[in-house]
Amino acid sequence: MVRAAPALFDALRSVDRVLDVGRRADIDRLPFADASFDVVVCRQRLQLLPDRTRALGEVRRVLVRGGRVALTVGGPIERSPAFVALADALERHAGAHAAATVRRLFSLPNLEDLEASLASVDFADIRVAAVQATASLPSTAQMLRFVPRSGASHTEPTRSRVIAELERELAPWTGPEGLQVSVEVHTAVGRR
View: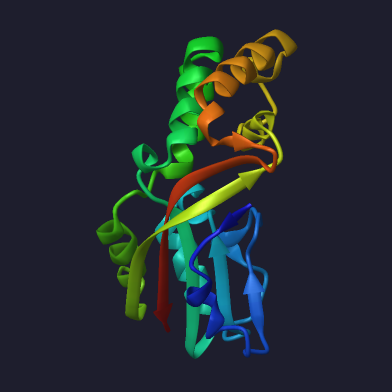
């Protein structure tokens, strides 16, 4: 998987009450009391939410005074060539909607917008950074895990065509260890 910005989270490891929102669907209405956590971690999720301001407001609400938020989002898709190849292959073989599901992973590409999102709900001491990281996958076919499992992109003929195209396109990054691709990840921390 992605090995990005370990220093971002190093300072947070000694904290007792940490909420990792992971793939929670309820980030905009977290089922926790006010001031329940010292740290909230949100990895590769914020850019997918329809109401980022509301979700960040909920994150702030469940943090103690002085608590920290730490998050990551995808940078510009153009700086993540394997995902450009995936989106392009999907567009050719499964249509624009399938390609949009991948491009959405990179829908918060500007550091300034990320910082403004945190500032809009009164986080302080905000630090943002762009980090070039490496994504490791056992095979090129594993790129399809970033595509929702519904629709034309997951019929067997379409999958086969997309995988074949990706194998050709991503051959320079494929070796005995699998697929090793560069991705740009944006990180942010802020204090309540």
